[in-house]
Image 1 (cartoon, rainbow, N blue to C red):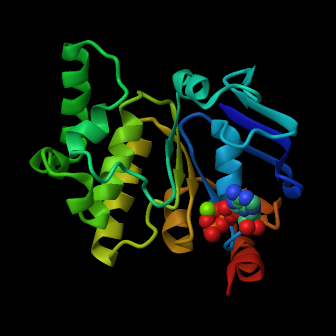
Image 2 (cartoon, rainbow, N blue to C red; image 1 turned 90 degrees about the vertical axis):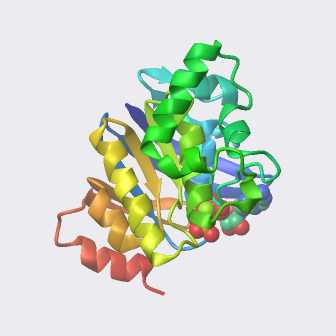
Image 3 (cartoon, helix red, strand yellow; image 1 turned 180 degrees about the horizontal axis):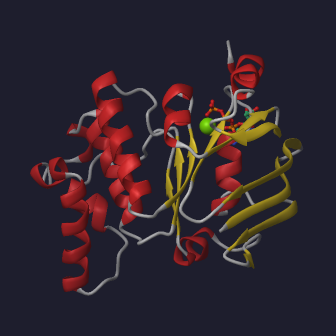
Length: 231
Ligand SMILES: Nc1ncnc2c1ncn2[C@@H]1O[C@H](COP(=O)(O)OP(=O)(O)OP(=O)(O)O)[C@@H](O)[C@H]1O
Ligand SMILES: [Mg+2]
């Protein structure tokens, strides 16, 4: 569904991604792991068009999307759940979900109903502003907002970051649910234990390169995690 081939991305003169090659097959969850500052978010931002690569290909459903604007990439069916959630704090839950959507009322209502059935707490908090939600609720809202676009592929950047353990379990279960409903997911996570439980396949990044990739069930993965991810 999504293939990155030899992707090179810069911030100014800093050569951050140095030849990233990875693949997200249809219907799978792919984990992208790595220590802080290794280039995980930059990979996600390269895909979504925030920091377009200078070299390399990003092919989504057969189309090279390098050079496309972020809104065009979203229209093709890729949604982002950004690191740090980034909901609008002064807007209500409903406004956060509906802002920017020029949909017919019936369609908008159906989409909202769908999100509220996945996350009933968002319905309860519909009129509350974003800043009054708990971390877990904000994360649900960030995921809900991504789903409003009817994506085929969801890019999730550390959705479990900074959440209380019980909430982590709730979000974890929701991601499993999304996987069962057929969404393809590229999951960036620092919670290695849960990421390996959710994902089918894993890529480990080190200094802007893919240092290891393999099936999550492979024994070798433990060694690679020790090598690249232990602090
Ligand atoms: N806007 C920016 N301008 C310049 N350099 C940046 C910018 N954003 C990130 N970097 C640098 O690019 C490198 C990769 O950062 P990136 O955010 O992709 O890492 P990450 O793997 O997502 O880390 P984390 O786990 O902390 O989120 C880091 O060295 C970082 O300092
Ligand atoms: Mg990051």
